[in-house]
Image (cartoon, rainbow, N blue to C red; front, side, top):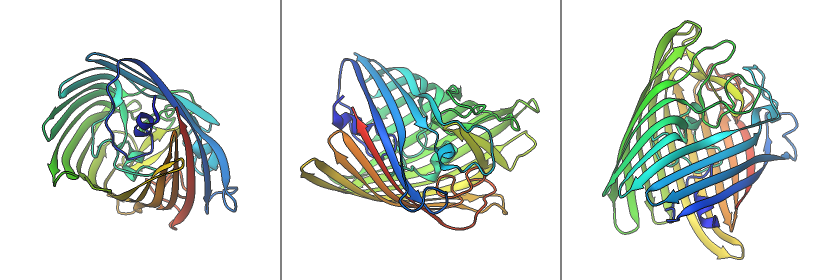
Length: 386
């Protein structure tokens, strides 16, 4: 694949671009390395550490209206490498690998069907974030989430509608946890929890409002409802979520706003938190709450030497937990994305409070909380896309 297409498919980015029409097979992939320094993990202060992060392979196919896509990923386990299993929820492998997505589809005019492990149409698309870290809803399975089922999309002028039904999350990949070797944060089973996601329906409606030749705003509403059966009690709980979003491009400026309300009504012994997992490392999340998200970006075309563009951004998000004794989670990120041919580099300075990846309390940060201080992490992610 050409570098322009690859950079549009970045895992952590918030960029939007149009995929060019192509026929037949296309292959691609990426290798990424990560440097970070923080104030909460032994060995990651001072000069910090540079580690291997990710390898992935992409396969895409198109023949007329028939389309297909798949992606497989390998990660070094972030939680294990950071040494932050203060409370072990299960899983501590040095590496994990799994399918991110794999679907077959049909595309014609303004209609598209997908069947298989595909992206859930919820909230701001394709991302509510600009940075390497995503925004907080990602860590509760409400941003860039992939599940197993059917999806229909219809585009008519400035309107865009989605309907989807997911039987279950994607399959568990390779790892040492019971059910958390996956890309998307899903409700997962552990030795202490028998909850899992089943039969989830999603609907999304959005409209683009145009403000001239180089400015537009998309405004949308998303709703989600599904079952949460508990294997241990043999009863079935419920979950729901609703999102309002607005995202726009105004010349070189970009803006993302989102509010998400969610609730789990569980039938398990513990109903104030739900166990969710990904990257072979589960943790707890408050069973009800509200996410607030805001992001601002500015794109600088450079075109000097290998450096093509620099995108500056500020991403802010918080989780307001319904349970009064649970402290709220916060994330502030200042960063830049640098494109250099087939290379893309994220430089992020993040500040977090009760955040699983910006603080010392991995297992409880999004649930009961823990350390009540702000913590800092400086991160550089270097990716080569081919």
